[in-house]
Image 1 (cartoon, rainbow, N blue to C red):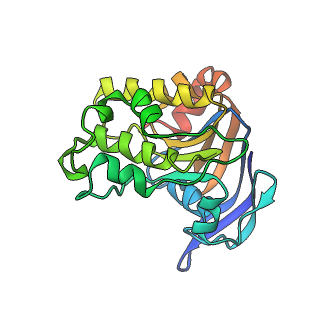
Image 2: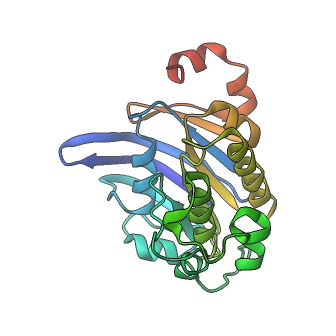
Image 3: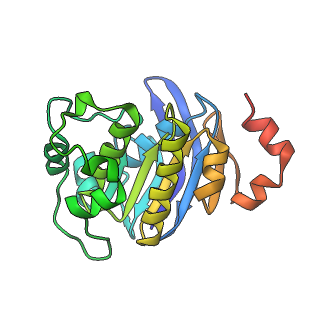
Length: 233
């Protein structure tokens, strides 16, 4: 579904990504793990076209997207949930969802407000509440729900568990498992290893803009020295 090959990206003259390669298959949850500043968010933004790749290829659903603007990538069915959430604080939950609406697309689950409120019951109880009057966890749920209104084939989630209460993290994990069951591909950036162990099929570790590990979550869980070297604080 998503394949990244030898991706390089810069911020100004700063070379941030150094030949990143990874992939996510249909119906698979893949974690991109690493410390702060390792290059996780830059990789997400480069895939989405928000940071233009300097070199390398990004293929989505069999088509190259590494030279396309972000709006065209989104229209092809690649969803992106940024770490900053970026909801419309003056708009209600329902209005935020309507902003993300796209037509149904072949090969992707179709979402509407009622289905999303089953996925995120908290949102269903606050349909008319402005986004600015919601907790951080509720805003995170709303951001994911708004992205799903675009009926994506694959979703990029940037730090979905960061700053959330443990019970909300558990609910988030359950929701991601449901998305996987719908056949959706999920690539998530995370520092929370336990969260990833609960939901991810495979993982990559990125450090200083380079992939240092790629394999199953079980392989990573069994390798204490690797976790200590690249993931410990």
